[in-house]
Each structure stands twice: as structure tokens, then as C-alpha cells.
Image (cartoon, rainbow, N blue to C red; front, side, top):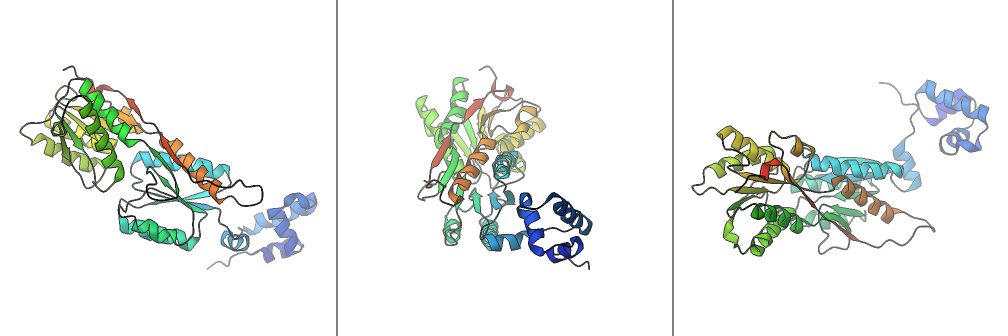
Length: 341
């Protein structure tokens, strides 16, 4: 087993003190050019890598930000991570990305890991509807920002999209196209986003003089393509099949689209479909998918900036005020919902 190279080894090979090596690494402008070149040559020759954990212990703060999302298989959360990473890198920080897989127990494990690593702070899309995981994590005193979730009943910052407005956009579009019997493929009912999108859908129906009976809900255990295919199969089995379906995210909508294609049901002529998130695959589907767009990259970047603001220290840092940032969704209309009725 190879022995790790330490700062003393670099100092010995370069013929300088340990303090000089430290200055080359941390304050290179304070070291003469010839000496700096000699130390850098020794570092390169020995393959020295400084211990970040040791540096953090000395400095008392981490250069790592945690990001815990519901599903890294969903391109929406990949875009959130891209935005967060962009903001973190601009501040000289890295991002540790973890996936709860919509599991409260896995979420608890990762939050414990973040606490053990003493990360600078955490960006979190909660999987635990009870809030117990957040309460347990709060005891560690590590700042966190909720992403894609309004910070209801908490004092923390949050960045989200108005999902009630988004659900209304989707269903208003379908009602305006002449549909009077709709389905909502909703995902796990414990997720706030799923409930808010349903509320928006019902609001749009009420505006059109239609009651809640006009919306048939088809819940799923997960928010992925396989769950969408299963919901599509259930939809096909209904005696009074709705003419349009609104899905809680694009992966569900793509699964429904696959189920319709396999059964020979025309989209949009026999069934109109609207998704949510406007992931890249929505426009690239066999039938381009109408979707409610969320500014995912912006959401991740804003959340990271709020966390950075909260964790800034020093006399020059402005006092941090917790804020709830709510972004507006946008309907992107494509062929999947453009049947003439």
C-alpha cells in the first residue's frame, strides 16, 4: 500500500521549511518566484495533494455544500444540480449531490452523512412528508434551504415554483381546447408539489364551471416513466375514458404516452396529454409533449446563493434574512395537446 505524501515530504525535497510550503499553497504571492517554482516542482514530482479535511478542521468551515434531491433519474433535478453547482463553483465551493430516491429513510441517512461531514450547508428537496427528518437535522445547526418546496411552518429559506398556478395553467389549456373529462396522474400523494398541482387543476375546472368530478385522479407510487406506463394501462381500462390527461411530471407523461402508443390510441386526437417540468426529453418525444416549464437551473442557482449568503461570515457580511422565493411557471404548448375538439 502506497504511503501518502505529506507537507513535510514536500519541504524536505524542495529544501525549504514547512511554513514556506504552506505559503506557496495558500499565499503564493508572499513567496519569491524561484522558491515558489522549486516547491511546486516538488509537489508535482511527489504527487502531493493537500488534506482538505485537515484544512477544514483548521479553518472551522467546509468548502462543500450538500444537495439532496428526490430523484437524480429525473432530468429536472439534474438541472437543479447544474444551477446549484454553477453558483457554488463561482464561490469556490463544491457540491456533494445525493439522491433520496423519494425515500424518507434514505433521506435521513444522507442528512446524517451531511452532519458527520459538517458541510457548509444543505440544499434539500424533502422526501419525508412528516417533517421529522428536517426537525432532526435542524439540531445540528447546519443551515439549509428548501428547493422545489415552500418553507411552510419553518424559518428557513426556500426556492420553489408556484405549483398551484402551474396546475391551473395545464388544465385551463385543456379546458380551453374543449375537454370536459380529464384525468390527473398524480404521483405520491404525500408530496406537496403533487397536491398543489392538483389544487391548481381543480381551480381551473371551477373557473370553467366544472366540478371536481370532471377530474379523475390516478395516483402512482413513484414519479417515473414506469409509473406513467402503469397509469396509462389503468386509463385504458376505464369504461368512460377521459379525453385529456394532466401528469404531475414529464416522466409520468412520457410513460402515459408510451402506453397509448402501444395500444394504438392516438395522441392528441384520442387523448391529449400535458406534463410538468419541461425536461429536455419533452420536446424530443415521438409526439412532442406540452408541459408546464419550471426554471430548474435558476431554482438551483438561487437556492445555492441564499445558502451562501446565510453562511457568509465576517464583519463585512450583511445580516442574513430568510426569504421565500416563489418563481412563476410557464406553459409550453406542443403537439400532444393540440387536437381539435
